[in-house]
Length: 108
Length: 114
Image 1 (cartoon, one colour):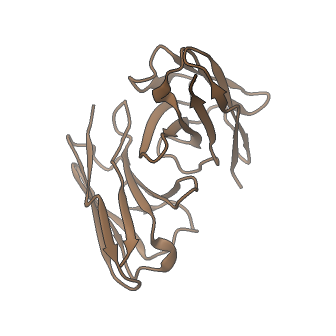
Image 2: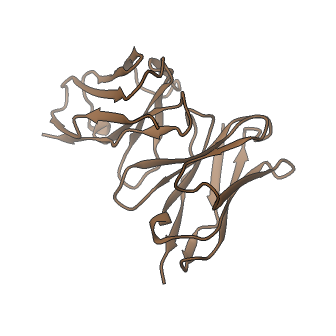
C-alpha cells in the first residue's frame, strides 16, 4: 500500500499568515493527489484534486496546491478565521487509496 | 447541486450486520465513481471502497470480504452492506462522489458494541 505522510501533524498560525502543509507519498503517484478540509463536527470538504486544481468555485483562491510524483504541498495564503481546521491529503493513483494522517491548523 | 444523504447507521453488536444507504440527488450514481470513507471517533479519515463506472468495487484490506457495495439505479442510491462487524468498525461512514471525493454526504454513525 502507498503510505501518505503529512507534515507537520499540527501547526499554529495567526490570521493573515501564510502556511504550507506537506504530503509525501511512499511511491510515485503522478498528480493523483487530493486535499480536504474538515472543520470540527463537519464532513470533509474537497479543496483540490489532481494536485493543483481547485475543486469548486466555492473554494477560496487563497488555497493552492502543487507537486507531482512523491512530494506535494498545500499552501494557504492570508489565513482567514474559517481556515482553522484539519487538512488531509489522499492519493487515488493505486488501490487501496490512502489518506495522510491529517494536519491540524490551530490559531496562535 | 449534488446532494448525498447517508442513512442506516446505529448501534449494532459485534458480529452483526448493517446496511448503509447513500441517496444521491443532482447526480447519477449509475456509470459514475462512488466512494465510501469512514472516520473513527477522534481519528483521521480511512478509505473504505470505490466503485467505478462499470460497477467494479475495490475495498480496503480491513473490510475486504466483510463489506459489499451495491447500487440501485432506480433509486439512485448506493449501499454498503457490512457483515461480521467488529468494534474497530465503529466510525462515521461517509459516501462521496468520484475517486477523488469531490462531494460528500453528512455521514452516518455506526457503533459496534455489546
